[in-house]
Image (cartoon, rainbow, N blue to C red; front, side, top):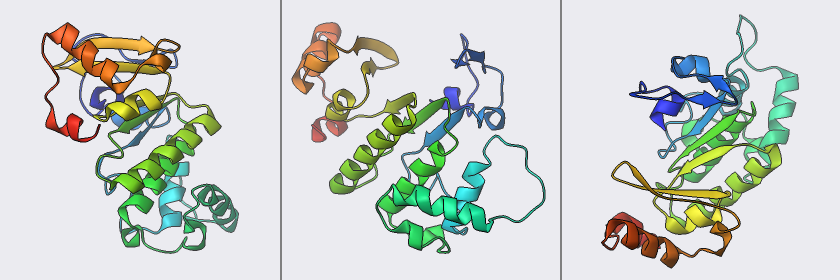
Length: 217
């Protein structure tokens, strides 16, 4: 995922996004094509800036910038309509510093910021792993709603096998850098978590023993 985002260099092969070769493009040059939500809710936002300032930066992703007012009245009205989608009441808190938000609120804002520019690819880097179970389910439902609304292509990394089958249309299981399962709908729609565990056992000749994964089943 870091290689796709441009954080790490590519060892072999090429990376194409929407048909465009971005293998040698630096991270900032891919900003207009890629949105990203990190595992840590603190990484996707600027804590000292307000909610509206964070959103203003998100809307400018990949766009040439100049000197001017950071947030205009027209933008503020637009931000409110976007925030209403979250259902968290953040549209009435535009002037609040982001550091005052809870982890779930901050992750929801990060998700919105990553998608407002309608990227060609949305990277979800274990984006619910640091949240409590109830909040994680809320963020996952919000993710599904936003991805479907904007018709986005998304790549989600998760250790939660249930999520890997519930979200999206294709599941790729990896172990020690090797792809051991690649299944898409309609066959995927008939699979269960137990099927994934059985598939792992058949390919690897052993039962899956990752405590982190098993605790999330």
